[in-house]
Every structure is written in structure tokens, then in C-alpha cells.
Amino acid sequence: MTVNVNGYEWKIIYTHNKKDLSRSDGSLTLGVTDLNVMSIFLYDKLVGDLKRKVLIHELVHAWIFSYGIIVPLEWEEFMCSFIDSYGLDIINTADYLLCSGYCNIAL
Ligand SMILES: [Zn+2]
Image 1 (tube, rainbow, N blue to C red):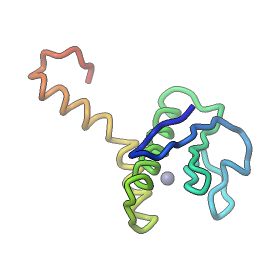
Image 2 (cartoon, rainbow, N blue to C red):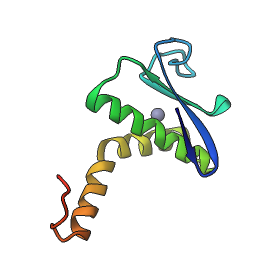
Image 3 (tube, protein in one colour):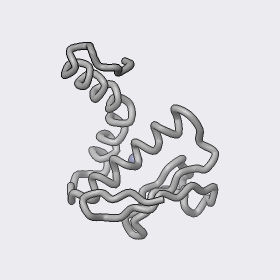
Image 4 (cartoon, rainbow, N blue to C red):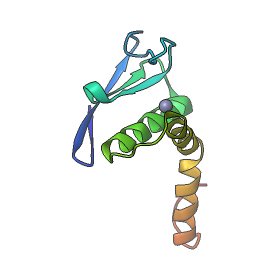
């Protein structure tokens, strides 16, 4: 599976390979976005809301890379975490407000 972001093709790879799910400091995580191989690695046992949250987090990394946004790593992680936590609420609220409450959007 791939996703195109601003002309860059990212592979989405579900895996349980520890090498793919290791951060630069060697610690394990549930998702990794690796610019060197243009791939998003996701732990293949993720399900439900946590899977969605990790996928959103890693997609934000891909968007940041693909649009050439350069910020300190701590800021990037903050942005990814903020959006994986609140992004859907913000978008759903905007859709609700734009529809004046008459669209079929669950909040
Ligand atoms: Zn991250």
C-alpha cells in the first residue's frame, strides 16, 4: 500500500520486525516514518483507535517531510502528537459548523 503526499510516494508497511520499529536511540515504538526508505512502518498487531492514532501520527511525519518543513525534532513530535490526539475533533467540529449541524457527521 502506498500514499502520495505532495508528489512523494510513501509505502505503508505493517510489520513486527524490531529493526523497522526502532527509534534512532534503539527504543521500540509502534510506528516509524523513515525518510531514507520513504516508508511508514506500523506494528502489525495494532487495532482500533490505537492503530488509527499511530497511523495519523506517522502520516503527519510524512506530510512534514513531504512539504519540506524543517523544525526541531521536539516540535515535530509535538505537532504529530497534537494532531493524532485532536486532529479528528478539529476536523469534525469544522465539518459540523460548516454544515450548520444538518450534515450526517457524528461528533
Ligand atoms: Zn513521531
